[in-house]
Image (cartoon, rainbow, N blue to C red):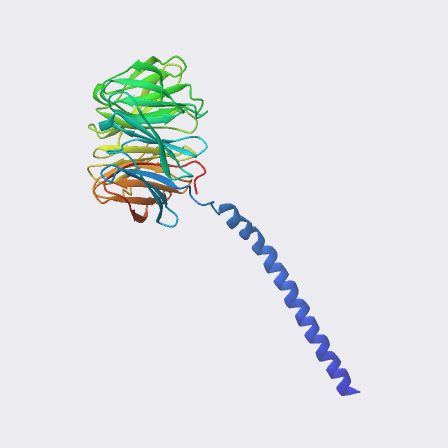
Length: 343
């Protein structure tokens, strides 16, 4: 009897210990759930494909910056420069200043489906939100041109400043902002009737520009004065600040939340990150390469720039300003954009 009682007590003790361990495991799991949920909340979807135009190679590459891989290469006409995507991500448009041409690329088919004439030296390009029209800056013609996206026919034109380069449309497609490089100004054009409604003096040789997501601020990279003009885009657009960012700022992009502005400096090869609120430059200035040009934001945490001299796409962590990797592309990459919905 004594042995039976001892065996029963042992079994009871073992059961008690197992129950206690089970309760402990459940408690640990319960504690871990909020952290797991937080990790899931922080998990970010894959970055969109980046379309990269390489000038000397005469090609557009579709680059997966997460995998550090080129997914496709599409040959285009000679000396491509600017590019833009349709809002649905199905079509790319590429300018060829030396040929007076714009190419249209079907991304699903991975090929050029049309080319059409556009002014004298089409350089910058943007697509209206409905995808029906293109806006093209004509470097030699000192004009902004509107084209029918389907046919390439010119549907409007307005004279602006000298050597218009980069351009951007507001979210509604109502206003176009154009960097008039040789006039040291930004032209503001009403797209509906193609009339210039304002000009805003900025630094020397404005080249690239980017709008804040809210549309209330326009950031303009001034190549020769080495600074970034910050414009209030209200009823009477005006420059409200000018911040030194480095040697020959050539590309500019804004994070999705509007909190930071990224600037690629061509001569120094450095990345400058501006706090949009304080207008302070982050102390870390990572080296992008020997001759970086365009820069684009891919996601809340990732950006990419092109290095003309090294034929590379440079992947950057926005939060830390660290260079995460480099991807070889065709000779002389000039510009890049994130393809909407592109994977």
